[in-house]
Image 1 (cartoon, rainbow, N blue to C red):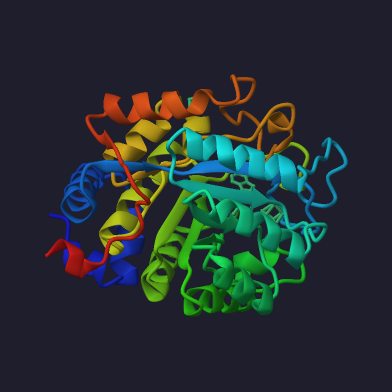
Image 2 (spheres, protein in one colour):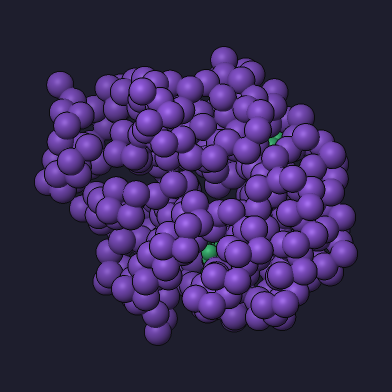
Length: 341
Ligand code: SAM
Ligand code: SF4
Ligand code: FES
């Protein structure tokens, strides 16, 4: 019998045990689905993502956008192009715009202010996912109306974090996430599954960190090896383990908003549908315009390329209905416990 209390208390020995076997999967998946229904309901929220620049000054060993990758056509969208896309998203009735990019200092504090101000006029929530910036910038953008910030912690193992991020530390990542949280952003953490050298204990640490920071949003996807990176020969994450981690994250932080990620849909044609069945309650249709979209190439096999560049909206809505859930209306901010009971 699955011990849900031990999961919710993040008992590391117990978590390590149930992560390292598929023995408990049926119970884990069923429990996650029940908790999802009880705490966040049947509504699945759409978050439209604009990947507005694939320039990156960072060196993350797993990612196709890393500064060292020369086999990538780089692009930057102008402020006008970004705002025009956000308008289209708002017109399509989607209430969250996610602005994502590599760590690209070309977009100054003021440029981001300009973008945020113009998009806020559209009555949508803004999620920033642009990597680490200064604490002062986080504060200014929050005051201008940015609502949420996604910055996966990537792995909560300090040793693995240091190996994957030359010259950087997990302590530093945590400091950024805690500052973002302190400023009042809905804060998104999360991690990859199947990183080279990652153990079940490391994944247990990831769950413990989600609980420790009380993550408002949790992005979990399989690591997918990219041939243009130093980790090209690694194996990558598998569907079952990734789904197990999504489900466990739901059990550990019952009210979090948890996407069925694009990477999950990229390793299996039904990956996102499974995600929605086993704990996820968010989906992120890709609204990056062409011709840029194929160049936001984090890993091979990324889905939704070459589609009509608004096709993902209808496609994700149909997907939600196909698993018996409903398309959420409104902002879909994180629910507080007192809104539920
Ligand atoms: N630059 C920002 C950052 O790092 O937070 C936002 C963009 S970054 C591309 C978004 C996420 O992509 C990362 O947090 C990482 O988990 C994921 N990612 C990067 N390379 C990946 C890979 N090879 N397989 C799966 N996910 C990957
Ligand atoms: Fe840059 Fe983000 Fe990729 Fe790291 S994960 S190389 S910060 S885009
Ligand atoms: Fe992008 Fe289906 S979600 S085409």
